[in-house]
Image (cartoon, rainbow, N blue to C red):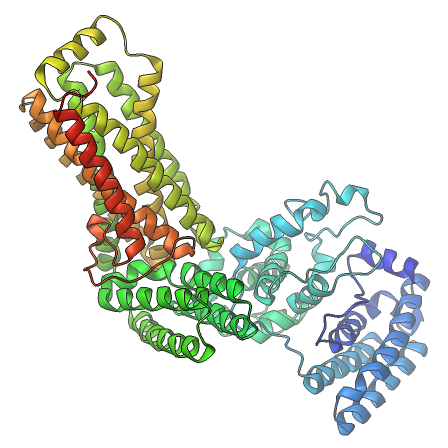
Length: 638
């Protein structure tokens, strides 16, 4: 048996010998699937053309009988009798060197009957995401199969036989994604191919569909794949067909043509991704909430609360922008309900209360799902939503930059201004890179992104307070003259210059990072057709912010230096309070910080969220700002 498995690996096929609990029939289906495809390499015209291949087919026939006797007791009597007769006949056909067409048809008939009798799921619940499959491949498969699926990964070099080359069309053409699903899910005992029990079914389907694209990588950018006629024909195929049929089987459903045309048709099918389902995020959130309730009922309170937090982060956070734009009251209501649900789980409240809270969340989510389903994005709607996001975030970021540049300009410290520009330009540059990778970002666990945003917010708060203290300390004319005099005698220290660059970077990057998440979510929701409108909105808002910044900077030079410094110090303090609220809110969405409601209005522009924890943090920062102001007025450090 070990030699058989080795040869199978060499040929690129596998025989799983361990089944996932609850799916014992999957291994029988997989074995029948293998026979239906590879008997042709063993027998032709009634003669054995490969003794090794034929011996393996005999072994698989025996394995089929063995698995049938193990699992048939789980089926109805009529199904057991019918399948038993077919697998016995299949064994006889293989022993008598029957034609491939007859053996294949018999194996497929047996497979279909087993699937129906066992209730085995062979089709994904929704269309798999190839982009996510690529991510899973890099983390789970590339180390053996190579980054490009050529079977040349660093760990694969140590294996004997070598891992499969997924670009080999002659072997891949007979493998359906369902076959790959079984391979990934079950693994091979005693070989380098392990099972992947920690992957969710959706991730395995994503990976299986991605692997099916490898033989067609050379055609990925061919215009034929996106032609309207091509798309219409590909759309007519059912998800069941695409998931369970091999390339050879799919060709029977596609227009006829020469080999080059057939490759393009198959590429169109394998690379196909239907329009984004806007209710997908709601479904994701509901799935997490169901899991959270199950954990809570099993008294796993901490795990339940964490899963409830994920229900918000991965289900609601990506569509937050759209919900706010179309029904802000609904979004606020949903966020409050989910915070209350997490708090109840953290407090170990009675199950009946948690269930009531969960039902309220589900009802609001249903309304949100209906809103998303009805929502269609026109060119101008996508444009204005993208522009409004960038304009709002841009103004908040560049307000700080304007303050710093105004101060430096008043002191004729032009060299220092270059460091400020380098800081915010670096932040924007990184933001552009992240924007192009936005779809990948949205597919990663969102809690990591939310944590990053919260950490950046508090770093920015600290730096704003520090610079605000520095500015206020120079707000009297005598102190400013002394400071400028000392700096004009020699260049500013590298420490000071780097501090200015770091401040401009963190303040701008915080807003850039949030903008990237919002724009990425908007792109997913609006669809590929509105990418142009979104891009135009982003650049238009950026240009408008730059123009306004130049005008304000020019006006600021007319203000007396002490007045400019006092205004600047006030602005720094105000923004520190705003960012403290937003940073706290990010941690609350993660479940790191508690969220106890307060009867106060929600004003996101000022970072005010109606929870005791976030407002307490803002009050603390306000007290620090007040102390800085008072200390400066009483003659602090010069």
